[in-house]
Amino acid sequence: MSESDPAGFIAVIVVMGLVAYLMRAGGYWLIGRVPIGPRLRRMLDALPGAVIAATVVPLALKGGPSALLAVGAAGLTMWIVRNDFAAVIAGVAVAALVRAGGF
Image (cartoon, rainbow, N blue to C red; front, side):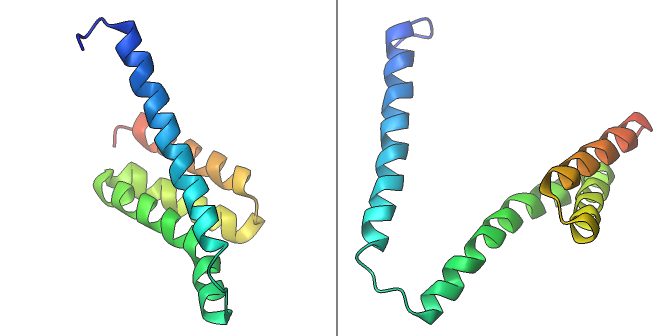
């Protein structure tokens, strides 16, 4: 496949989409066959927060002061307002202001 081959590019995108769909469908199929007790329920309830932490913490640590302050502002806004959209807006605004200030 050459760099300018549109058919190969489209094929790769289609295959990646199919694999992503099969992974999600397979997960739903698998969890449908597992009895969900209280311990598994607690783990599944904690999973979204763990995924967010695993995504945000490395970015905050490698992003310097602007990333740390942005994550802090988003966390504080979420704690006070309890609104995801407001937290995102606060984080982006703080990151933009800190970077505009030269940090």
